[in-house]
Image (tube, rainbow, N blue to C red; front, side, top):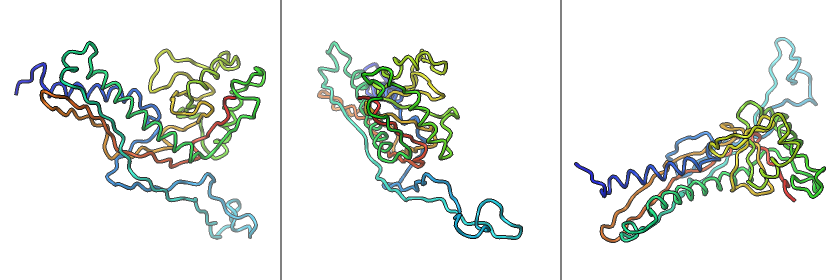
Length: 291
C-alpha cells in the first residue's frame, strides 16, 4: 500500500514519535526508578523497615551475633517488612484538532499538540512519584529556621552541611549515596539558592553540565543534581537511583491518532502504571530549604 503526504498512517507515525520524544525528555523522576512490567490491576509489594536485622542483647551470649561459641545455634534475625498495595493508575490526555485548523493554521497544530500532550503525561507521572517519596521517605534532614538556603542572613546559609547531613543519615542505614547512583532532586527555586551560594560555586566538587540530560544539570558533593518542578520549592530529596523505587508499567506510553474525516483528528496519549517505594531508607527528604 502506498502512503502519501496526507495519509493518516504517516501522520500517526509522526505524532507517535513526537509525543514519545517529548515525554522521554521530560521523564525525569521516572528515570530514577527501576522499570518493571505489570499485568495486574492491584500491585502489592513488601516495603523494608529502615533498620538492619539484629539479635537481642539482653539475653544469653549465645543469642548475640558476635562471639557465637562452637556448636551453638545461630541467633535468629528478621528483616521487618510491610505489605503495601496500590492500584495501577491511568495517565492520559487528548487534544482535538479540527480539519480547518490542521490544514490552515499558521501554527503546526499536530506538533504543538504532541509537545503539550507529552509534557502533560510525564508531568503527572512525576507528580505521582514525588507524592510517594514525600509520604514514604525513610530519612529526613530539617534545616533550622533562620538557616534556610535563602536566609536573609547570608552567613547562616550552609546548604553543603545540610546535604552532607542527609548523606550521613543514609549511611547510618547502610545506604551509600556516593556510589555514583545518588541524586539530589530539587525545585528550580531551591537550585537557584544552591548554586548562587559562594560555598557551592567555589567548591571543587561542584560541576555544572553544559548539556542537560533527564533533568540533571550539575553535580555537588558526589550527587547528581536533578531538577523537577513537581518538587516543592522548600523541599529536596536525596535518592538512590535504581534502589529506592520501582515504576510498574501495565501499559507503556501509547499514542493514538483517531481520524474523523472532514471534521477533526483526535490525538490521545496515555500510560498505565504505579510507583512503588520499596526501600524507604534510600530516600532522604530535606525540608525547610527556603524561608
